Image 1 (cartoon, rainbow, N blue to C red):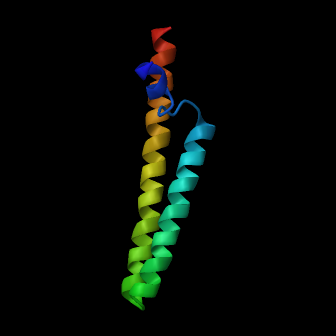
Image 2: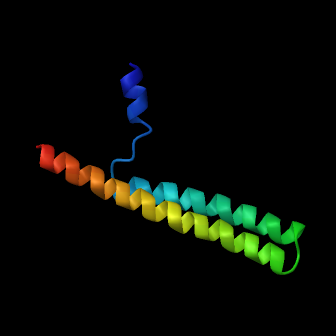
Image 3: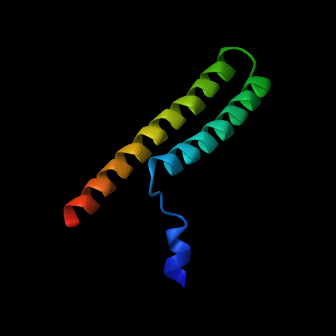
Length: 77
C-alpha cells in the first residue's frame, strides 16, 4: 500500500515534469513580486531574477533526471 502511495510522487512523463515546473514558476514569480514590493529598486529586481533563475535550474535538472531514468529503464528492458 505504501508503495502505491509512493508512486504518486514519481515524475514519469515530460508532461508531468512540465506541470511541476509550471507550478514552481508560478510560485517563484509570486515570491518575486513580493520581493519587488518589499525591496524597491535594484535589490528587489535582483531577488526576482534569482527566483526566476532558480526555476530554470530546477527545470533543467528535472528534465535531465527524467531523461536519465527513462534511458536506464529502456536499457534494463
